[in-house]
Length: 273
Image (cartoon, rainbow, N blue to C red; front, top):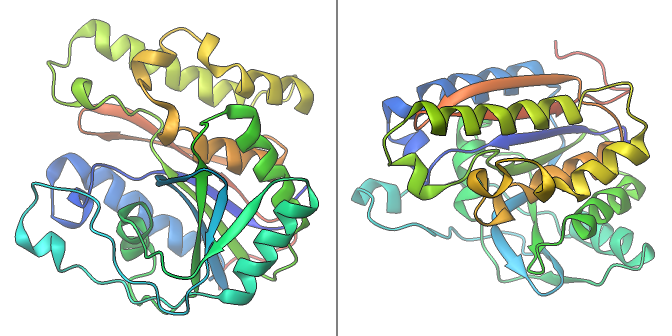
């Protein structure tokens, strides 16, 4: 059981949460409030849905640049800056923790920050003065592999680390912009209910919960909510690290769809002052 604060967040569409988009207003309020409820971290590790590599890869540069990995947005969205420093020592710790568990991992000193990192952190910690590193997904997109990555991170020894899985509990791009029918709402709600129940039911053993998360594709409406799984897998890493039911859940409406965020609080950290 980890002693980190861990949060899986549904991060919204591209830079839209930073552009006063009304369909992201609930998310903006939530992310700002979440930061105020957590002890200020000494460093942040972000697992972003927007970075995939053939092996688990960690940003290791001291001053990562911005990656504007979206298109078709106003010019201001390509001028956003989040000059948070990297932390090479923490990146090396993450690499070592993964390797000790038999997971191939490498460092990347050139890779910058993608919007799965800088959009939510701009809302949570706008001063950009907390060191941040990112950890990639593995492009197999295998659920069990990402649960194991999370479990391996339990070996990290870093005081007051915040681990953020930045994804989206619903991520069907066509559905976001299609008519919001009763049937589409029902599919969305049923999958959200499954996620919430699976990650909270204290009647489940952790072996049973892990198996359910491994077999998530057998859940009705799974492929409707996730035609491709990259936005759900940061949640697998977060649960693998936490190894227990979540402490807090928040459901917000983003682009007319219900989306979840989950928090596992440190078992040793005190409340923020």
